[in-house]
Structures are given as C-alpha cells and as structure tokens.
Length: 355
Image 1: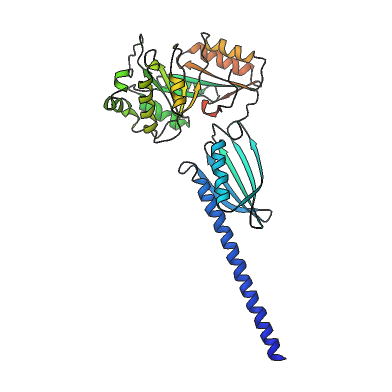
Image 2 (image 1 turned 180 degrees about the vertical axis):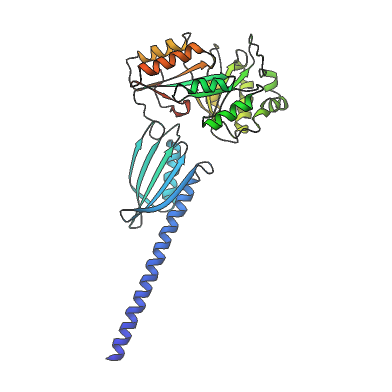
C-alpha cells in the first residue's frame, strides 16, 4: 500500500510539473505569437512610424500599436492579413474616427484564447472607412513665402496653416529651418516656367531644364539637406503646367528626393489647360486642388460660409504677401469661431466633399 501511495504521489507530482511546464510553454508561445504579429503589423508603415506595447485588458492580452500615417482600405486589408497569417481569427472590429486620427479595436482568438489588438492612427490623410468632416472646414495654403516675417505674421492668426516655401531663393534653407523649429509641415512652392512672370530672387524651372536629368538635379540640389517634405505646389507655370513630360520628370525627381515618403500635391494653378492635377493623379500621388476662382480670399471665404450644405471642405490658396487676405481671415475667424474649422491641407481626406 505504501509503495502504491508513493508511486501515485510521484505520478501526480510529475503530472503537475509537466502541466506547469506545458502551461508556461503555452504562455510563452502565445506571447511570441502576439509579439511577432505586432512586429509585422508595425512594418506596414514606414520605419519608426509606429510604437507598440503588450499589456492586459480585463485579464486578456492587449497589443496596443500607435502609428503615424494613413489607414486606408488597402492598409486595413494588409493589417488583417497579418492577423490571419498568424492563425488569429477575428470576432469583432470597432472604431472611432476623427478628422485626422482613428482608433481601431480588434477582438481576436488564437485557438481558444482571447487577444485584443488596438491600433491608434494619427496624422492621417485617409482613414478607413472614411475621414468624417464635421461642419465646414477650410485649409489655407499660404504660398510664395518669401521670408521668416511672412511665417510669423500668419502664425499670429492662431489657426492651423499650410505654408508653401518658394524653392530656389537665397533664403529658402533659412525659411525651411524656421518652419521645422516651429513644428510646421514643410511644403514647397516651386516656380515653374511662365509666359510672363519674372522673379528677382531665384529662378523659374524651365521645361528644358526639367527634361535634362543633370540640370534638374542641380535645380533640386537645394533639397539635399532637407529631411523630407510633406507636399508640393506649382508657382506660376502657365507654360510648364501644360507640358506633361516635364511635369512627369519633375514629380519623379521629387518623389526620389523625398526618399519614397508619401508626397502630397496641391494644384494651385489658375492656368486653363493645366495638367498638374491630372498628371499627379495618374502618377499615384495624393493630389488636391485649391479653390480656383477669380474672387479674392475674402469673397471665397464668405461664399463658402454661405453654402447651405453641411460637412464640406475647401482649400484656398493665398499669397503670403496679401495683407488684405490676412485681415479678412482674422475677421472671419473672430465672427465664425463656432461654424468654421481651419485645418492643414494634409488633414483633409480625398473622401471629403470639396466645394
């Protein structure tokens, strides 16, 4: 009897040890699976755009990932594909969307074990299923910035703005550095060959120079020390914007200069027959049009506010030296504080209704 009792105790002890080891191994395997899944999910965005942490939610593992960038239909499909390739099954997806940010929560199973994945997306141009617009919103593109004083003056308005720095001026590098110090996005307004415009500081990029690889590289060498830029717009360009080969050459070079980062294009051209917008779209750039009108900035703002439609957007381009436009924006902000939101161009989704 004693031998049987001892044997039984040994059997139970060994069983408990094996069960404990199996349980520990199971927990390690689950943690490894979650960690590998998180790593692959973060790799869907550019390097260093994401951070992740594994915590607990009501006793269940919660993988939290925060990324800077878009989460459109294609990116969501890639995100879910990573989940499924690691043998997770999806039970529920929920989300909350804001004009530039989104939070997505996924309840998944690995076998019988519940695991939550939470994704925070910030600084997004496009969100799945769409970026909502609430009320009326305007993006002011202050282009042809010629000095640091221009930036300081417009920033006193206290609203989000997008500045287009004129490329090729003697002080372009200084202005770009100031924008970076202020935490503003870097946008370039590129002076392109025009039938009548002459500029005193810098030079217009000609069609011939754009079609010559060496001369184009020399023209864009001012960007060699720029650590990436958000967007580009044409400045002047009555001739250049109608020349598709020159546009394609310039946009290709800018994409390479930006090292593959997503570059937004804003067509501010008032030239009839301009191909800037269409060429950018064909080349798969995220492309917008500024509001094109013979009206001045004040009239454009007032006509937009008078629209009967709700939840609409408009991008208005204004010259940095236009003091009348500055005063008008200041007055519009004061008198329409509750009905009009100012945002950056990069905050606008292509799914927004533009008017």
